[in-house]
Picture 1: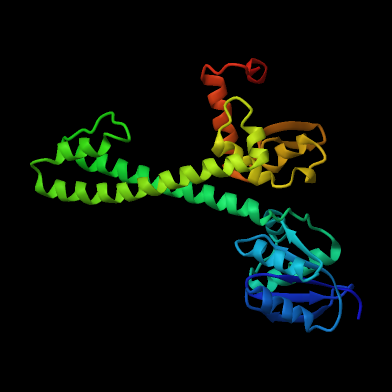
Picture 2: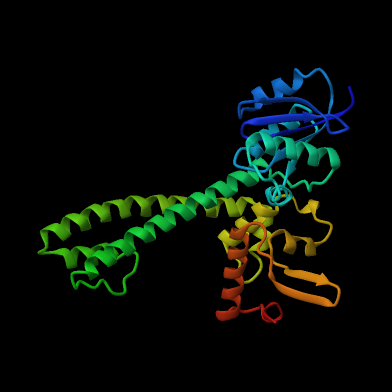
Length: 296
């Protein structure tokens, strides 16, 4: 049998031969062992295996690579655009469509981040989540008390709790609310400090992050966010290639006499764009020494 192409998604698997004829179709569990076992039972060699990027794709991709399979990780945006004309969207049709993309070579493989980079990203994501919930609790307390004419005003992280207790004194129901939300805040604040310590330790151990932090205005969060997103600098032939990866280059539309450049594409990791913007904003608005050329 000629070399075949295969695509896997959450439920459907489709194998086609070199002429595009469907050889096998089925559903396989979203587990590396089940997927690798089924592919191994086919009895013929697979020329290419397409795996659409998604929540489980990196885990499955690494397991399949270790098993010696010719797997490629496909960019979700390209797959979605290729299927815009599809009248019926289903797992079965998705599997068939991507199998054909693999056969024709109409796909762009994406980089699968190393496990170390994924762990850094997970820590940063968890830290951001705890930070946002901490702010939500504080803002909720401010909003609840404001409805009763009790204005919290300007506070620091240290005196916020004391200010809330002062305001709710003499209001039994508000005191109950204040004590409950302050208890939640205390837990979140403790966990946030734990994440902060962990991030500081990780930034000291990461050589690329230390190098980035030598730039004025770049701190631990920005450095780790960017370093983990880049993962392997050797995959870029030029530093200019990093801009398009994170959607920082302008869109371009050219047709006949029309030639216009738009805003940045915003394709890629939004957290990286946010981190770089924060670093640039600090550099431009704060009196930081030694970065006049960089400011310009």
